[in-house]
Length: 187
Image (tube, rainbow, N blue to C red; front, top):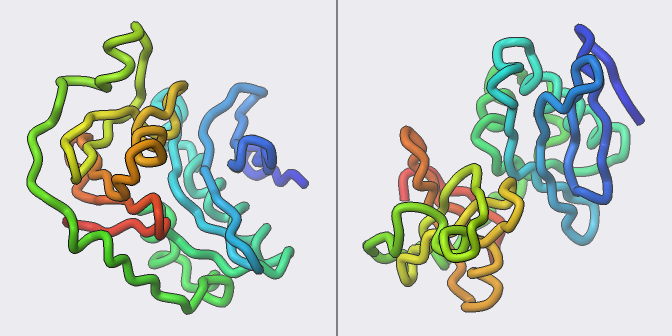
């Protein structure tokens, strides 16, 4: 299924587990999601290419994801800060938001740690590139986000069992638990 508004075409790229927005054929942005057992979809992260900012790409992605969930009878678990803000401005979508309020016991285990590197530790070692950096709140490992080609932060979490990362991006103050798939502001 695809939807078009203002020249922005949004589709569900199921294999990539994300909604993609294209403008004149070029990838303008995406919204990552995870399906949970049952009828839930977790909206994880929205990213808009800086060349397309201010053109309604993020809003188009959020609107499409919420309408798609409504059409498919899914409950939305909004973990992406952009989607959370979108929902505050658009109460007409509250009927698809899950009433489940997850509690993450792993946030109690968060420690003050020193970052292991000034970039993605693993990308620096292999000559890779990254988009955004995440800090493991158990050991200080710095890894790249799941929007980066190598996804080192989530790989580190799987390999070590360290569940919580914090964004190292300027102006962002949130943490993510890989186990419970919960985003928490200010941790």
